[in-house]
Image 1 (spheres, rainbow, N blue to C red):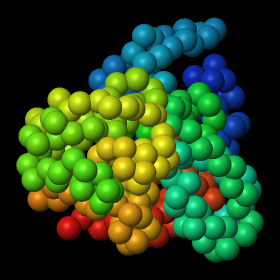
Image 2: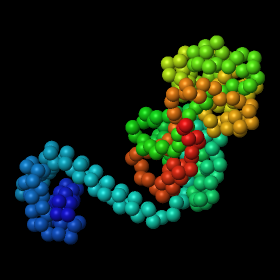
Image 3: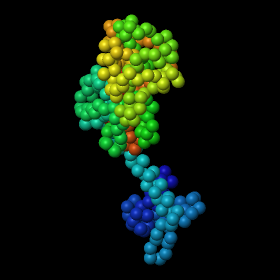
Length: 294
């Protein structure tokens, strides 16, 4: 505690320009402030102030140390505010960006609305790569591994992509038994909406060099075309759960699928975790289970 008092004495002296003014701010005598700063200089083995009979000014080391001290006190204040917020019920508008495919997971969002009726969800469905901080989102839900170091992350459910085709297509073109067989098939590919590049299928090196009969940046047309017998597609299981259950699509090469994908909830690391954001992150992590990997 004495160390924090000394740091606070130094910060107040820096901002007010004198021991007397700093003492008034902290309810201490000018002598106590001066001794606290002197002890701090002795411990650090540097001079923090240039002093004369008329004024005092920070040394170069003092300016550097002041920035550090300000950050320390800012973090302490943020921690106090965060603890105080834990007693506040989640409420207010929550702006969240989700991929288009997440529209299939809206029952989970509906359950969140029931659990937290005072939180107003503002949902933006888009496959473009949004800038969470610059565009003012409270959180985003995305698949894959995030690359933005400014964001915190929470895993919200893992899933294994499925290679699928309709029974009619397989009857007409044969059933591939190895990934290499896909080279002679009609492959319905997905493109990244942010880069325009074809997304590889999770089949090791074979998944990078497949034919492109057609491509789309969205999931829905690939599902429709696969069901209609126009080719083989690689799709997330929650997008085709009903089609698989009804036999309109058949899962292929299951033993060859070598990667597992996941949903992540991301939010700015620099932003205070409000009760509404914490509630959303915790709820998604607990309830968004798109498909358990085998």
